Image (cartoon, rainbow, N blue to C red):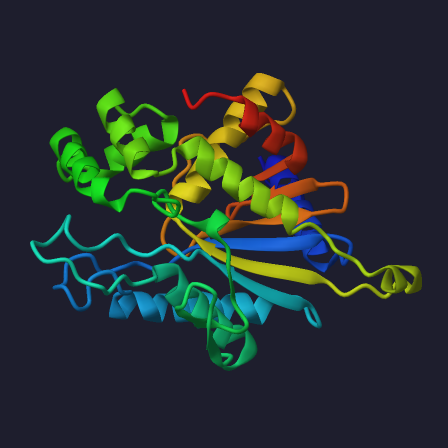
Length: 309
């Protein structure tokens, strides 16, 4: 028994040291992707969709811990989903203009923890005020980020309620697996919403574009600066990505997905880290130590070729 315990400890220590090496490797970009903080969906119109007061404290704590463990001297960038909480006519008789951005709120807390302050805001191309430091990328957006027909949203939510009632975990399980009933799937299409394969493709495209960008003169001098990105997104994005990693693994026989990642669920403020090199080789490390190695460009090509179901 003692030999078994010693062996397991040795493997854990080796994995820990390997992960630390990935974080320090300046030739790999590290993408630390997290789900936004918990939103308050029960309040009245003015505050619906903002982070709960306790959730703000939780985000502040995890952001503080992340910042304290970030590589010394690293160049850190912040990306966020631009997605609003869907609000208006589907919940209340009267539409209202407040559409809280839970990812932006979460990202601003990370920004403050990492840089000690928030950068001044500016008016973006959309006409809305945005951060000068944090970058919004629609590929981090939720299933309604690309909605083209918002007038069809009430039909989608009505059909979802009829099928699932308040059992949203069951809805999300079917959504991720691509097993929505045809009429609900069509209602999502009619809104211009994204299916789980589309979310996985968007996120994989984002990862690929974030790959290491090393100035040639720095490379020649071998004095590379570690590049780190914090990206704040949504549960359906991360869960869709991991779901299709599993399918890719099984169908293409290219990597092994640990059983613990089957039917993957991500809690508020949680996520995983992706360490990407210039050849698009990614090492994905999860909080409990699970690791998946994959070529992101090959995975993206796969996503473009598969059906949802």
